[in-house]
Image 1 (tube, protein in one colour):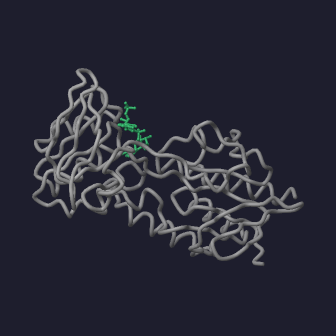
Image 2 (image 1 turned 45 degrees about the vertical axis):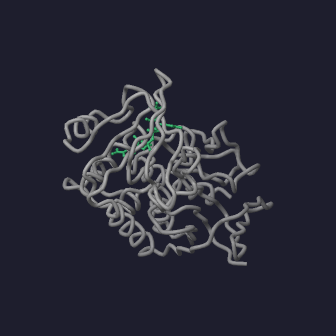
Image 3 (image 1 turned 90 degrees about the vertical axis):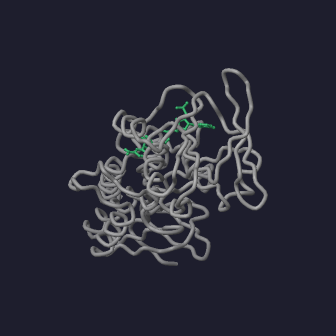
Length: 305
Ligand code: NAP
């Protein structure tokens, strides 16, 4: 069984930063990633609020650079999905889809995944006009009309990105006030291609082989009408990727991992960083900062034990 000092689960901004720090502390580090490195950032068009990049940096570019930097100092990135964690008298075992590993300390950094609306037609038409990633699918909507669901930073940032391709972007929000930051609100509201429909939710996604319309319900009047569209992009927040942790560490009522101010979970030797953590500020710079903190805490734990 491969035996290592630290296992980091998740290769987003927090996991990759943790790996950079543990590797540079000469701790043998394995980082598990299910798909591609970068987590949510890899699916983001441009990151404008990570210090040091006044012109912005694309999500894929900063993800790849973070991975490259961690590997440069010795991190071993393994593309296997972690299934279960077990506490031993000393250390932990990590069971993945194809192997079992042992480590002295764990850092949980699996982040969160986009939420679905949960209406008829959504699942059936995913990939056929329903999307959760503008960077991945935006180009398919050149010259077409799309709707964006949500009123947060993601909805507006991705909605603005979609104006590069679509002729019209209609943001559908369940309230009449946006949650997004003022700078994005100003940009979206003043963009000639972006329109808003307020106090409204999507009740159904309609289409045979591809999306043709959405059924919209006005929450104030109760009126339901079909709204023609070629595509629907959903950005209504995230749920934590913590299913594999059930019963292993304490989580809150929404499933986020509970930590103390030093990023220690309920199990000594297990730390959590980034969006997986209850109370985390969901920003790349904060994820990176927490990755650093968790790595230093793991290092101190290993020195003490
Ligand atoms: P969010 O801030 O949680 O916003 C989710 C939006 O979706 C809210 O407007 C919410 O409405 C709406 N919503 C939630 N459930 C819904 C449902 N079932 N049906 C319809 N609408 C629903 O999520 P996010 O925009 O993905 O952002 C997540 C975090 O990442 C935030 O902290 C954000 O600041 C950060 N982020 C930052 C940037 C940036 O800095 N440029 C970019 C992207 C994301 P209500 O407003 O009514 O609750």
